[in-house]
Image 1: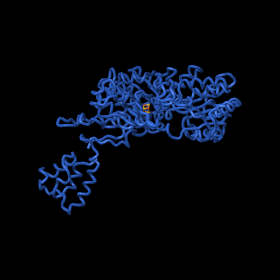
Image 2: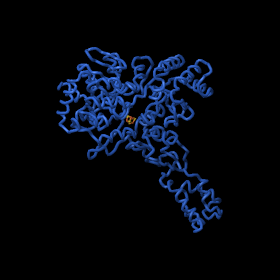
Image 3: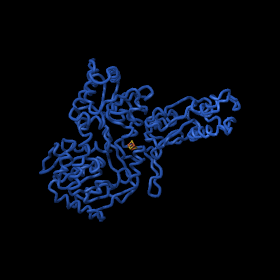
Image 4: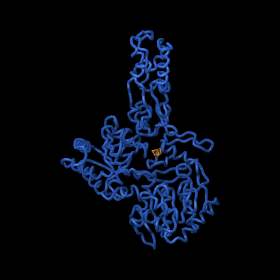
Amino acid sequence: MVVCTGCSLLCEDIELVLKDGTISQAKNLCRKGHAHFQALFIERTRPMIDGREVSLDQAISKAAEILKSAKSPLFYGWSNSTLEAQAAGIDLARRLGATIDDTSSFCQGILMELVLTGKVPTCTLDDVRNFADTSVFWGADPSNSHPRHLSRFAYYPRGEKRQKSYEEERICIAVDVRKSATARLCSNYYFRVPPGQDAEFIESILAVLDGKIPRFGDKKRMIELGTVLRKTEYGVIFPGLGMVYSLQEKMDLLVRLVAKLNEITTFMVLPMVDHYNMRGFNQLLLDETGFINRVSFQGGTTVHGPEQSVMAAAKSCDAALVIGSDPLSALPFGTARALAKTSLIAIDPRRSLTTDAAKVVIPSAMYGLEAGGTSLRLDGVKIEFEPFFKSELLSDEQILAKIKEAI
Amino acid sequence: MVSAMEIYQLLPREACKECGYTSCMALAVALLNREKKLEDCPSLLNPKYLEKFKKLKELLAPLEKASETGLIIHPEKCFGCGNCVVACPVNVAAEPTRCAVGLGPQGDRVILAVEDGVVKCMNIKECKRFGPNRVLCNACTVTCPSQAIEFV
Ligand code: SF4
């Protein structure tokens, strides 16, 4: 059995057959996971300095040299690395007085902080399968982002207390700006909220739960939603990026809604983290520093704030180490341009815009197939995995150890 | 998906009963269920109906891909989410410790399984829609987020 690192569900029931150096058969792997693993066989990175192919040792010593002479290095990425690599990265950042941040900084970080610091109650996906009768996908479309979410946990499987599952005992609610693939499965429990109006939607639910007339949305439908939520025995809200970007600094509304729901019944929150080990990095950094992301160790102190986010630090750093991520494609143009202009070191199994622009490229093994380790699933459950086959390539933590040694 | 009415409208509608049915609509339904072939309608073979014959051939072509139970899978639309694998009552009965609780199947007694990122269909005779005692189960189509499975 292989563990898929295609998304944060870390599916553990994958069976692969390797033939002539490629995957000839993959069982139980969804389309996203299949594409993720197949991608391994195209456009692999090679060790490079300034666009010239070099030996791995040369690339590693060059990276060490850049980081050693940098005054304010930035470490970024981490969500696609194991806990072992993340721990090595945090340790190296501390030693070098670097700023460290991950992809949660501009996506789900704000939600993850609420969960990891206990401001909203949470549960595991196994609890969802065994007990949940209402799942609310809010600004999230798992059918596309986490394809097996509904079949493994939220809607279709039979659980300890949910033997009749989707036929009689489970309800899925979708709150989204459009009728997504997931919303289509929720039949009459799809609630359309125009972009940026989630706060009003929450206030309306709160009003309905208090027995007042809702001011936003179709009154009849809102009252219907209130009744479903009230009747729930064990509910779970799965907020996605849509909710985060819409609520922004009004996230306390979600906290209020969850508190209110918990006065009536049981309601949990599980953020729909995308990258397979983003939660792992947030948890490790929280345990080490008290903050889930955006930390600077400069001058031996620990500073946290917007200035330490990748967006700001990209503009002030003099070297950047990017691991398992492609910020040049994903981040706003200003940040991407700033990163491309610094001395950029990219550690990645595959070619990307970031590796193309990097001064130093260090190829790494792909987790799940070529390297093993431990990761936290989106619900915080530790998943351990072995490499599917042996590879000459070094894993992220081995590369970081070599850089540390060279420094 | 094509309807019996669309087929009916393209038939000669001469009510000759040569096909063995009492009405042309009955033949249209039989064509849809793949119990009869276009050639079973002798009037349709008349050259004056050549255009209609060609159109009907085109219309019925996708049905040829369907399994005995009328199940058609469009792999290009499938997400490989496994909703159908977990919802199918035959799968659940075949693998109560796996499909029933959301895991992919391990044995070979299931009807639906995800392979290479998309759903595959096997053991079709086990499907509840098969045989004389068939029931119109639709667990796999209603749970599909992308309309990748349908019945004719
Ligand atoms: S749902 Fe996610 S972890 Fe599971 S097989 Fe698909 S991509 Fe991989």
